[in-house]
Each structure stands twice: as C-alpha cells, then as structure tokens.
Amino acid sequence: MALSHTILAVLSYQPRSGYDISKCFEETVSCYWQASQQQIYRELAKMEQQSWVRFETVPQEGKPDKKIYDITPAGQAELRRWYAEPTEPTPIREDLLVKVLAAPFVEPNRLIEELYRRRQMHCEKLTDYQAMDAQYQAMTNPPKTEQFRYLTLRRGMRYEQDWIDWCDEVLGFLKAELP
Image (tube, rainbow, N blue to C red; front, side, top):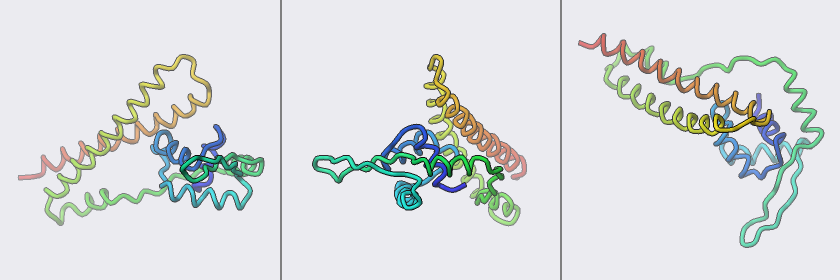
C-alpha cells in the first residue's frame, strides 16, 4: 500500500487541506499508518500530477493561501482499483526483537531498561487510543463512516496491548533468568 492510497481514503470522507490531512493521520490513522506533514504534502503534489486529487485555493489574511484538496473521479477509480487488490502482511522490522535475540551475548540490564521504556511508550499510546475509544462509546447510533474508523482504532488498541503483554512476558523471563 502506498501513502497515496491512505490519503485517498482520508479524502473520501471530505475535502481537506494538507494540514488537516496530517491532523487526521495523527488523530485517526496513526494506529496503522504514519506519515509526516512533509511526506503528505509531497505525496499530494504527485497525486495532483496523476489527477487523483484537485485543490481549491482559499485566500487567508496574513498567511499563505490554503489549498483544500478533494478526491477526483480518477482518484476514486484508483482507490477502487487498489481496494480490489489482495493485501499482504507487512514485514516486521523491529530493532527490539533483534536486541532480544542478542540478549544472551550482551549485558541484560540494558535490555530490561529498553523493555521498560518501550512498554511505557505503548502504555501511553494505548491510553490515547482508550480516550478515543471512550468518545466512540459515547456516540449514539454513529454513522457507518465512524463505525469503520472505530474498527481501525480497535486494531490499534490491540496492537498496543499486545506490545505491553509481550514486554511483560520478556521482562518476566529476564527477571527469572537473572542471578
């Protein structure tokens, strides 16, 4: 999957500025796709060249003009084309797993410190997602678009919880192994 397909999916909900797309990534997409604001703007320029998006310029006083991007019929066709393709699991490239693999040959306290640090990071992210979850839970009869967003949030919550559980498992093993 390319960043462009994620942007097309986001724009399918409503037209947005590049900044608003970036905020949407932070608030709703970050549990499964991350991109910097610079990457998003670069991709939007490419997508405009491919006629997948168009923009309307909105003048702003005291600031540069704002571009509001919208998905075009060609962009909708590309999203449907990509959507019809089968998905493949994303390969894992995780430094922490390599450190666990190397643990028998190095000082174990460094790994313990790193596991606690990473565990804390995943706890903080899970807390953020749980706050978003509470907002969804408070909705009465949410629209279908929100229900699908919620499903992606639930996957992000499980991802973070799984990391926490795994860190606890490795920490328990290391503590039992240390003299």
